[in-house]
Image 1 (cartoon, rainbow, N blue to C red):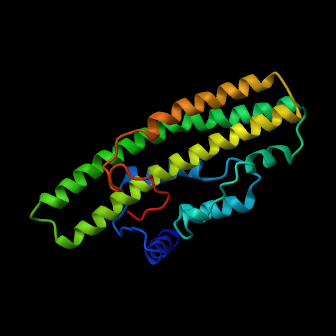
Image 2 (image 1 turned 120 degrees about the vertical axis):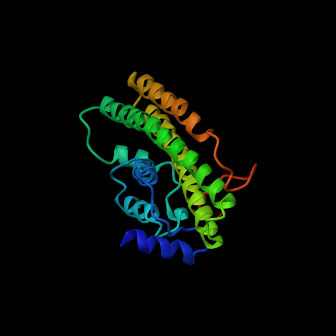
Image 3 (image 1 turned 30 degrees about the horizontal axis):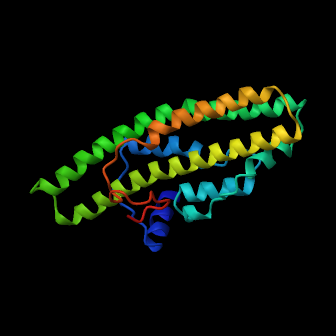
Length: 215
């Protein structure tokens, strides 16, 4: 029900939505995106539900929290054995994100490549009905919009981790902060190639990267 409800909800908001079935790579890319779209803190239960609904396109992406202090509050709202445990959790979360970026990027590159073939065929083949060009373009916009969204949420995660680290250092200074800082820096370095990869320009050249699929 969620994909169908998401399609109609997105259409009602004026966002691009395609009725085409997802390819295996498109479906896998959406599954891989889920990690980055969800809140970094497992204790953000309400925001987790909002993000789930946004991932299904039932509610707008703009409903997600943009408060970088959310992760820090989650990190400090539960008991840990020591201050080092909080720094370790921060480093572990950063490293876990970093290890998942490569597979998502490889997946996204395959989708972008096939979208290029999709549009070339839709525009040049006499066997393609004109009515299929619009949903074809809508799917390209959906795919690129998802990549942009993941990049925006990755940037939000990195800023949230940096906020948490700075506040931990002020409240509970520890040498473990060095390890956490290195993990965040490694995450930033891994995210850069994903968010600079060439796409198909579905949203136009030089424009601000969107957080919705309006095109």
